[in-house]
Length: 199
Image (cartoon, rainbow, N blue to C red; front, side):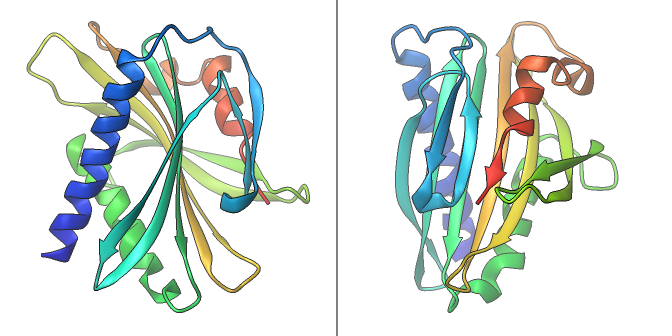
């Protein structure tokens, strides 16, 4: 039951933020700015001033803090979602990460074996390069609007022996289908992923 509530809560917040950003006033196009989030342990490059949402996720009789920073530019929503686990909660990391990943992959009708992906690296604040993987998803739609996404997950231990789970993504919504991997390889999207640096 808690897993269902967790899933519904995450999806509800994503839809709420997407609606809010959609209705927001015009956003300057590709007004790149560095955002330092000391409380969430990262530095990111956003193509505009991001909006921030915070909430507590109910999970196994605990409250898990989650923060989301996102900005909408034309047909795209750039976002960084952060979940923080204390040292007492760190054992939950594999399950929570797996659930985040499964939710998105299932929405796209794929799994890790069939999803289009590419190997990538990210750089930490102390300039170490770490391996990661990007996934390129196309969400099924019967309507006139097509959605696709590039997403990356990163985990990092915190100085207090807890952990952060980061989900970086760009969601593209448009009338026409795009070939996700080719589309999201353009510089404006690569900049967002390349310039995310956990502290």
